[in-house]
View 1 (tube, rainbow, N blue to C red):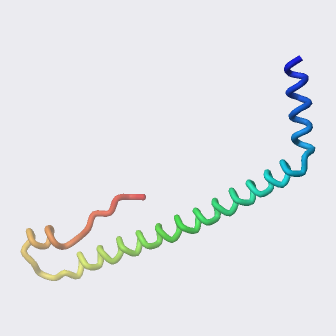
View 2: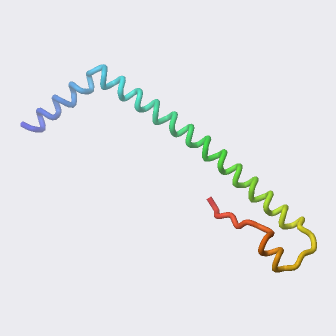
View 3: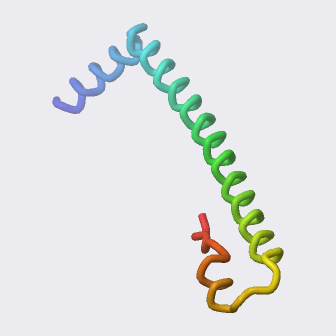
Length: 81
């Protein structure tokens, strides 16, 4: 009996236009959020790689130095993404 009522209610909800519109809007918002997040991740990854390259170039081009000061002030350690 309860299963029959639940099935009827579910069928009526699926037929309603408001539910269909709400489902469509939520799906569109989810797709947009995935695309925006992907774009943001790519931007951050590019900036991270650029900073790593710049730091490496600074380390390699620092010239003759005392090893302690070269190691202490010469580079940043980057955590992998």
